Image (cartoon, rainbow, N blue to C red; front, side):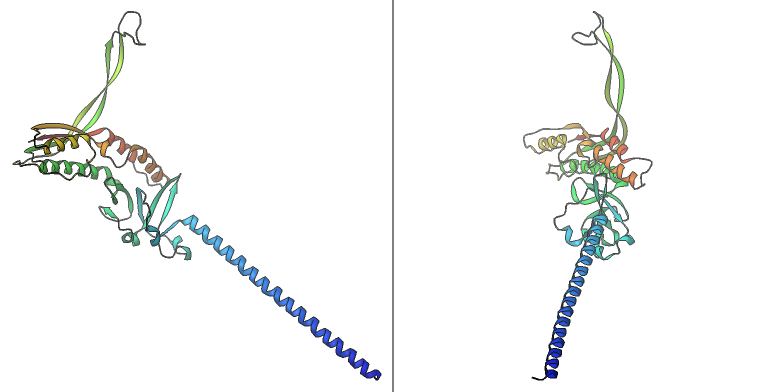
Length: 308
């Protein structure tokens, strides 16, 4: 073999080796580039999902599919849709949850009220509403809540009188007053006793001021039929009255009953305090608090006089 042929063979070997090296480098560079792209895309997805979860936790949107089996809050607010919900993660939302010191309530967008299939009295305008104690699908505007339930109970007493065949009934709204009086006691067996003499002790008496006649009516009278009772369904006085009147062997001609508002209230004082806290947080508290309204109701009764 000539020297030139040997040189050419070496050159060919070197060129072939160069091509192999270039191929390996290109392949590894390509693999590294694809891995970098995959890593970047994975990181982007992680960041995007993190941002999505952050928005969900921050805005707490409610969607139509969430309503299946959902327990609604007793306090609901109807609101206008805010711009902060005009983002992809809230697309299709119909409301959102809000929380104040552990108390959670539902906010419904006014343009989506019909999606909830709830009844709002007197309308479904922007406002706060509280659940009717006799119907979980009905809500009463908070500003009229106590007056509305008072009217409902008076109307129900009228209907009970009609169904039971009464000839006359009267409902009087009365409010409790506390009277401080001094009573004399001989102190026998009492820690107030001093020697053998009697002592003066303070005592309170609960009496009621007559406020106004809420309803009064006369009827021809008839045989009783079982009334349908909603608001006073669990009041023992009303249950006993109906039982006696519906008893074929019973005889009741006249009764006067005291019906406590607190026995059929849908908004207790403890819950009223929580509602006031929410209203204060939203800077929507008025001159009269919900708590004071609940306290007034707890001190009120309906005197129910009925004759057959």
